[in-house]
Image (cartoon, rainbow, N blue to C red; front, side, top):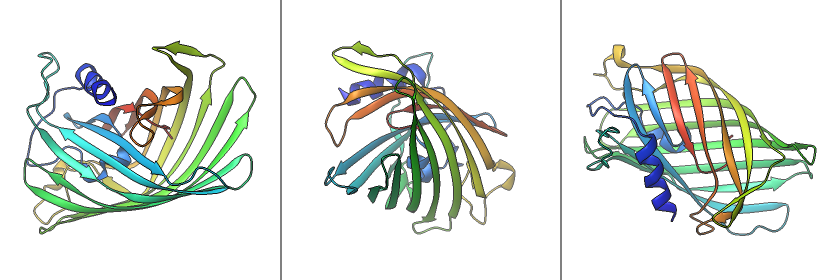
Length: 271
């Protein structure tokens, strides 16, 4: 059911993409950018991120788990013909460890470390990827409008595997997610509509067009120093699918900055 849902959403939201030696949105960051249709200076790339995870223990103030996110990217996707892509263009797998600590009733601290690999199947080039981050989440609000304030800082980098390419960035991420006093049921699953807004500040510019190599054309690069995102999600009362491979939210958002915009599909907590 999970994968049928992903294909359904991909068909009805993806835009045409351009296959090129320059990678339109560098796939190494796919699991940190999130699912979406990314547009940069006229180019599109479709990325689907599946946030697999497994918790060892949900009891106690400190819990541990595995992060197993997988992302795939598609090129040459033509919406008017409603045809699925002929092949996957990129794939990224960045397993990691997560440690969460419930400091007080309202404050939750989260941390993670990932190390994985990504490959562009159209150029047969791969990159080694690593990332780490820390978050503080504050739960507040009234019974009708429960809210979460998120504060995050994280770092991600990639290095070419056998060729000269590397890049890295660090970011601060602040956002608020608020639930509405509504409950609906569809196909036996109860859900709550929620809205959110978030902003990103990047300590170092993020490269979204091509990996930084000695031969890269600097005119093709689009770099970011900040971005803003807002959207909505449907939060399900129970996970759809398996506990380690299901979804607990479904939503849509829009992220934008100078020379950059993205419609994002959401399958987990958006901020």
